[in-house]
Amino acid sequence: PGILIPEALGLGNWVKAQEWAALPGGQATYLGNPVPWGTLPTILVIEFLSIAFVEHQRSMEKDPEKKKYPGGAFDPLGYSKDPKKFHEYKIKEVKNGK
Image (cartoon, rainbow, N blue to C red; front, side, top):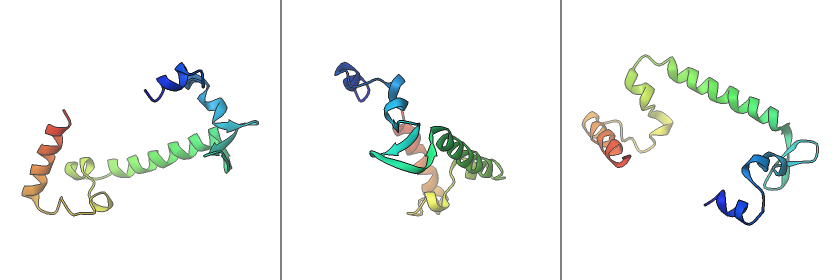
């Protein structure tokens, strides 16, 4: 419904979203305010490089379990500390992901 309602009301469509997401001249906006450091291509390059760096770091991990379940900052409650509980949580995650 998030994309259907605006189209049905004639408020734009997803194909032209990049036109109304930027000020004239291609300046990107965030909540109506111009983003001082970029146009859409600049933002895409920053996004691509950031994700490429993170994925490269993840791919360099030797332990296959850590590749799938990074832990650290992504496990602030320490669920992965107990291996038995960790296995149980992984099973629950798969079952709830149907």
